[in-house]
Amino acid sequence: MADSYRLMQEQYVKILKTYLEDKNEIGLYQAQQFSKKVLENQISPEEVVSLHIEALEQFYPDLPQGAWDSFDFLIEIMMGYGMAYREHQILRDKQKELESEINVAANMQQTFLPDEVPDVEELDIGVISVPASKMSGDYYHFVKDNNGCVGVAIADIIGKGVPAALCMSMIKYGMDSLPEQRLQPGALLENLNRVVEQNVASNMFITMMYGSYDPRVHHFYYSGAGHEPGFFYNRAEDTFEELYAKGLVLGLNRDTQFREYHKKIEPGDFIVLLSDGVTECRTAEGFIEREELTRLIHQYSDLSAQEIVNNVFYQLEKLQGFSLRDDFSLIILRRKV
Image (tube, rainbow, N blue to C red; front, side, top):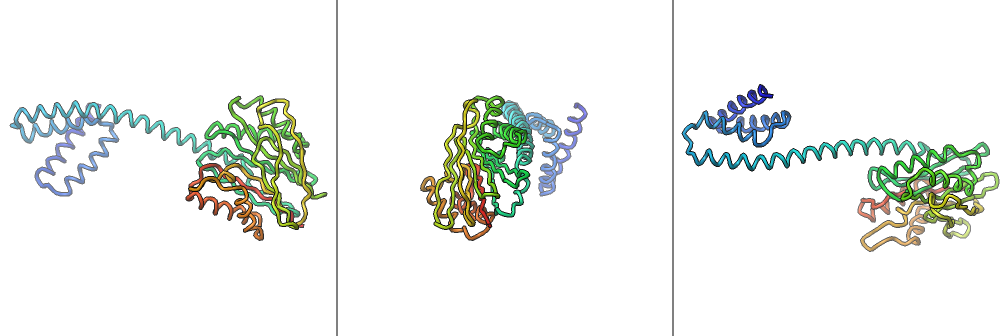
């Protein structure tokens, strides 16, 4: 350490001498480069002042005593500054470490979501899920059984950040471990509710809507656990109605039972599932009304399901100044034939 300081001292003397003799840009450039070495070698601000004093003693040994005393004063100031700066560096390093861990968690969280939607001849499926920050509290899931039935889940973890990501992993584990009755919405939510109640902290709750489309009879069966109601679009009547499913949030009561509902789906009809980040889109005038959302969906209803969700997201993001205030998830399932 002493050798390193001595080397820095020699370099500083040369740089300062060059600048005092020539007073040009070269000396200033060398000073900038030297400051980088100061940071690399973790030289404190008060030590830099000491380097300057030692150099001045060589160049101007006859400086008045008042000048030398002023440097002692400056060193005291730099000692306080240096301590604050080192604390800042420690906090910054910790923040970088935390951000790195959050990035790893966010990347891992993305692996919980499906890579692609199921390929079903009878259905046109569109999905978009965009987090408001790095970590999302929204989750969606697709599953297709041997009979061609398509199950779809959309969930919202009440909470954000790493705790929400851990809950999301629990949901995925719970859904992946369920037996074949997983496509029966009521039974699925009851099983998943017990998994959540046993394994998730008491202050964490999960809302979910789960539905199953049976292409053999073209019925959509669904149940809800305190989740934001979706919509059913009737093509023949050109109307929207709420897809409401009453039920407690997951994890609140181990013995909760969930009622099952169903809709007959005709060609051109579609189901809309969403998170509250869609219906609670906040603009300068306040939250948008659900009627405004259905009008927006209807505006693009002649497009494919994926184009509908993409356009709706763009328009709602635009209303919010392209700055999401909550996680946004929107799924559309439309019967083709």
